[in-house]
Length: 242
Image 1 (cartoon, rainbow, N blue to C red):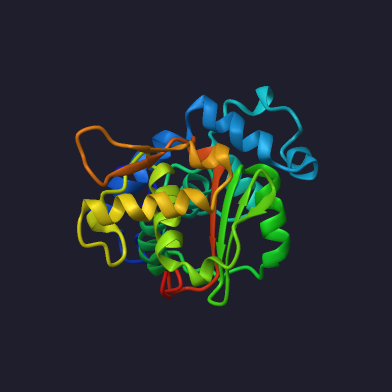
Image 2: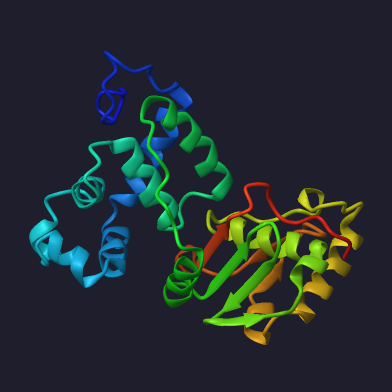
């Protein structure tokens, strides 16, 4: 995928994607074409969707995941397919997805589909262990399908840490203290993490580890496929006193 034409974009009539965007899309494409993620994507399809693709995973192996996505969604756009697959399968963090989505939209504009937030949340809880939701009025965390903690919007420091831990885990990253909202030093991060763990289930709290040799740095020990972040606010986490 060295050119925009190979990405499914008609570069004769559309602006070309910047080199950095193409580089990121190429990396994501290699990830979503691995057999494990192809199988994961197939397993997450509904019975109707699998039937639309012939119903036989083995028979469709010659076609890559991005090609199947375009067939299923009737969108002849490889950049869009790569974006949605990588983000949906947890190999692309929300921040990177938002940036690439803006860049791809310049050459491949689409109308955002109407969504039913409650239905999307229910589906996310069925398919992921940790689901975090924010919509400008409320913040809700789900673990194994059950809501955990209360009134997260009143504990924005804890929510900020939880959200960043989950987002970082989707791409195998850690969260240092200086990336946290209004965190002055590592000791402040230690106190904040302690408060957060008290609001979580025991299993989820035990999944948060300190990083050896990096005071105030934490990581969430969950595989990316177990995590789903749903942000309907368009403005990031709510900023209220903790």
